[in-house]
Amino acid sequence: MTDIGLPLDSQEDSADAGVSLASPADYWALLKPRVMSLVVFTAVTGMVMAPGHIHPLLGFVALLAIAVGAGGSGALNMWYDADIDAVMTRTRRRPIPAGTVTRSEALAFGLFLSGASVMVLGLVTNLVAAGLLAFTIFFYVVVYTMWLKRWTAQNIVIGGAAGALPPMVAWAAVTGTVTVESVILFAIIFMWTPPHFWALALFKSDDYQRAGVPMLPVVSGAAETRRQILAYTIVLAPLAMLPWYMGFAHWPYGLVSGLGGVGMLACAIAILRKPGDMKPAKRMFGFSILYLFTLFATLLGEALIWRFLP
Amino acid sequence: MTAPKDRPVILTPEQIKRRRQRNVALAIALFGFAMLFYVVSFIKGPGITMRGP
Image 1 (spheres, rainbow over the protein chains, first blue to last red):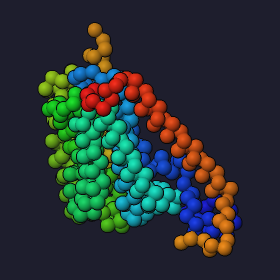
Image 2 (image 1 turned 135 degrees about the vertical axis):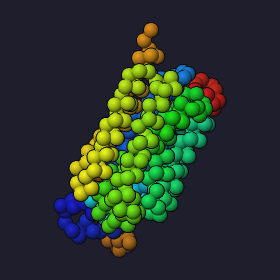
Image 3 (image 1 turned 90 degrees about the vertical axis):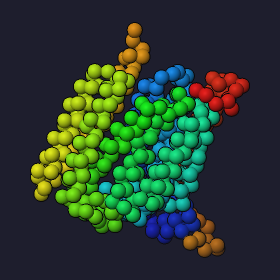
Image 4 (image 1 turned 90 degrees about the horizontal axis):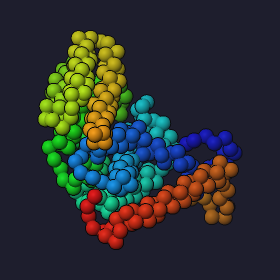
């Protein structure tokens, strides 16, 4: 529990009476703001790329609903995973293990935000987008958090679908449907997720082992993880160029995705070549974030330029 | 657990401060939510329940 530097007797009395110590910042932390920012960024890209028109304010409200839905599912994830979070160095300062928010408060908060976000998206845009958002939340909370995460080393491979859906949701908010283009945006994030998280898991494997999470390095060892990282990167690099091959992105994206793919492959090969060294894994973790950001920033930039300039 | 019934719960100044912060945040969020629906109803007009971008 947070030490608030007050007489122990009165602190214990009021805490025993169920008086919350949470501040708005603790509730904000429950939303996983850094994950939410990535969700919003990829969703903005999907929305701007989608053929069709949406009123700017409705577009803003749709993005807000997608962000709140992501935040709500983050709160539900922290509610369910509080025991794991408490033993991992990366997550032990989260509001529930830190004692500032109770599990039941996080559950109520997450359920309300998730329900409200789906309802608002459905009212403001269409049922396809709202249904996809509801599916995203369900997939992240139930399929990934409750089922896969503690059960299989393929947890983040399948669970990565939840993180890949936001651009598809935003695309559907504009068009009312799912198209090949939006599926490709989904596929890029889906294939990016395993090498990204396995690079993290390589240098945080002790954490995952202590928490009993069957990440690939814990279950199959570091050598197999390195091979898998390279295998997924070999598929990811050309896949990320598909928007350019298929003609819904332009040459700058082709260039950026090609060079970025080469960079990802170089990182993956470096990891494979230096088994005892954690530096290549850390480098790949950082580079993969930059890679995905650059891909979607280029797609967004191109879409804005080609849409608004004559 | 609950505090004994014969003793009043005394909040610490920090708890009072955090409760006030939560109340203000909740008021802002509720006001924002109401304004959101108000503004959206102007854009979508009487057909707010009709689906479509």
